[in-house]
Image 1 (cartoon, rainbow, N blue to C red):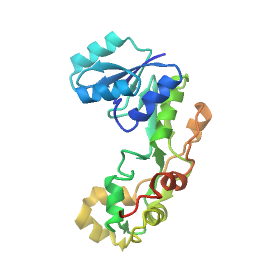
Image 2 (cartoon, rainbow, N blue to C red):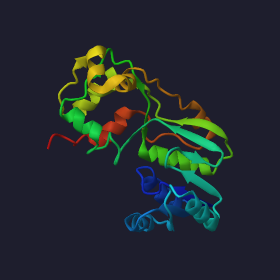
Image 3 (cartoon, helix red, strand yellow):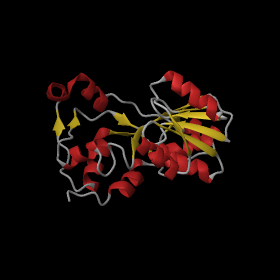
Image 4 (cartoon, rainbow, N blue to C red):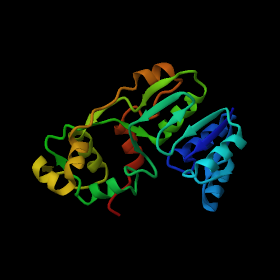
Length: 229
């Protein structure tokens, strides 16, 4: 199958391109700069040069590529008529990665539990996101699927465990009213009102299951040695 990937050098794209080529797909990766083009080639794909914000150029390169499927990783995750809804992405290159901004905040003791920590997160490792997209290309499923791990968890549960893995200070508890002054209403809502997602439909309809069934194993694999040093 000829697959055109927009967002080929993003955190998911870097996992997706080698996975697709290893399974025999002919992959065309979008690149805007010379550096991105080199990376696309190193990942085993053919380069299509265009600015994703230039609609005429995008129409031209997609037409020239004549793909059987387009995977759009720029603002949403789509494969054919199927939309994959990802959870909080973690792994290399994300905010939850070894050098990610969220991890640095936790290491510095600057990421508290707001209120009772009710916000429930569903996590997705970048490898599992790429694997789900690959599985979707070979399916005839349409609609919207949640691509997340098996264990939604509230902030009060996963944040202390993340801090422990990082050998970081235990997160403090901060009242909602005080947190709102520091991070605003959106920041408070993000940490207190998120609701987890269920991956049952994705597991049942795609030939896919997460490598890391829980963020517990995934965080440990990614961050066990990410200490203050």
